[in-house]
Length: 194
Image (cartoon, rainbow, N blue to C red; front, side, top):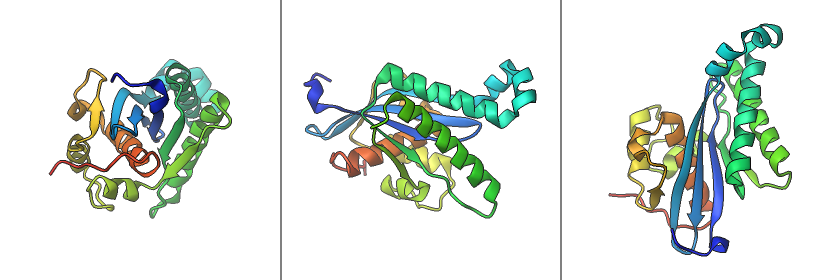
């Protein structure tokens, strides 16, 4: 888009997970009421485990996964230089261990963000609020419903070179998180296709 850089806010949106974490970098144009996805990435920590079997045996698989998430988030920050960040917060279901693990993932993400910029605004958002914001029932686990909802957002542009419908489910969720931030914090209008 051809606008003054001072009119753009770059948002890093993250859908955390211990095996796969989705990242979307979004340029938000408050004056134009548009958000443009400029980068997408899925961090697959299982690949790091294959590469570093000996370290994983010594430190534990989960520690190596957390290092991978930290490294990748810091890398994205250094390349894309976000102004603010929003990530999904852990959901405490019937089993506490997944929520504890996700809390540790969020801590690794926040460490990377604050190592990049200690004063960067970092906000969390619960999964059901994000879903409702894009028109999906808050308790839905239907990934296709979420994909259709994000593809159906009228004022998201995509310049990644990959069609939005082909994003991974984690990138779709990260896109919804970034859109939530663009609307609620940066003031672009919420425009869902009918």
